[in-house]
Image (cartoon, rainbow, N blue to C red; front, side, top):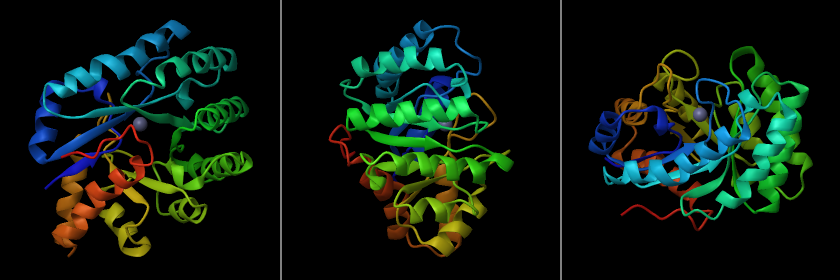
Length: 268
Ligand SMILES: [Zn+2]
């Protein structure tokens, strides 16, 4: 099989993960900017991280024959300090022409605070000014429904945003319809301790259909499974999806969304 990992934090993974992913059929990996497991102390920390995402990590992935793409932002977990966020956002335009940058992400909300919302709006403005795709992180557990509503409102309030150029990630049963009805794409994150299991993700596909949805592992420095997407593809097979439908979903869908930027090159 072949698949695209549309959301993996590869800077936190070891080379064995690259080997396993490529062996399982991974044809491209896309890495949104995220928290480092600790709060960075200055804009310089983000500058170095953006260099890592745009220069060093693509080279590391290339050693395993894997095309690497990324998304840039200051993530919601570090968005409480609006002044810092302004300084970091000012750094981003100089990186947008790098060959692997697909857009702005993963932006969104973590605790649904006023400052996070302000920084979210600043990111939406940045994406609109530079005609970038957007990848959105939604909060977890009890904050998810409210946070998703706030995010969808913020996207709708900026008339420059084209809904089909936005993927809202970490959707679950109670938020997926909101996201799709707003015209966006939805991402289902397969994560062992929180978010979706493979079985729940396939239940969502059974009820919502496969259009404008994708699955990702969101593998990072926490307990996560870099091969979650191919494992879920196996689950799809057990549930009666044909190999053609599975290919369309785990490869075709992410490729279709990301092909909205010319930066994304269709894997061979
Ligand atoms: Zn993530």
